[in-house]
Image 1: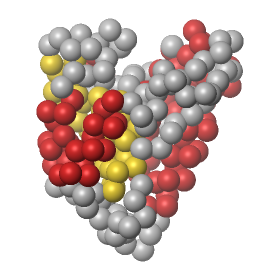
Image 2: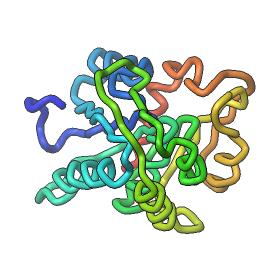
Image 3: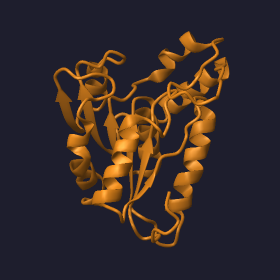
Image 4: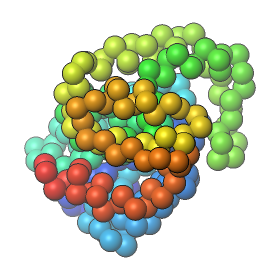
Amino acid sequence: MSQSQSKFEPVLIYLHGFLSSPQSFKCQQMRAWLADSHPRITFCAPQLSPHPGIAMEALSALLQRYTTQQAPVPIGLVGSSMGGFMATVLGERYRLPAVLVNPAVQPARFMPAYLGQTLRPYSGEEREYRLTRADVDTMEELEGEIPAPLQGRYWLLAQRGDETLDCREAEAFYRGQRQTIEEGGDHSFQGFERYHQAIIDFLFNQQ
């Protein structure tokens, strides 16, 4: 995050997926494009712990830093996979717009399969994690924060060829929100760069 940016200029917070990092391709792609096309927008991509309680505590502190200012800045969220779930929780807590890219829906269902395993980031960083039952409980609590119907403003970007998550679940979960569902593709969301400008328009031009 650039410290030289004015506090009144927009902030885009990018949330990566489970065991991913800010070094992921989509994140770096958007960072580079924003620097070239919208240099006044502050791009913030925090490293998220796979432990949901730790991740949400850090994200809440980050959001509070912006939202409690005397003149809060416009904030938009982009979340990929598990980051899409986190973006939804934050969108509800802070009434923020969010773009969700092949997002996870009710991720607590999948977490027990990881219990007892030594987990390492896909991006190759020298870190190791072990999830516990308490992490599953925390994720279930976060899921309980999301109301029906949704109160935030969301845009679902999903591809039916996602080999990791069933995009039909996201379609149903975000019913009534803006949706763009493409045939083919994969979990990484092929051709994400096609939506960069539209994402900026959605997040900031209606605030």
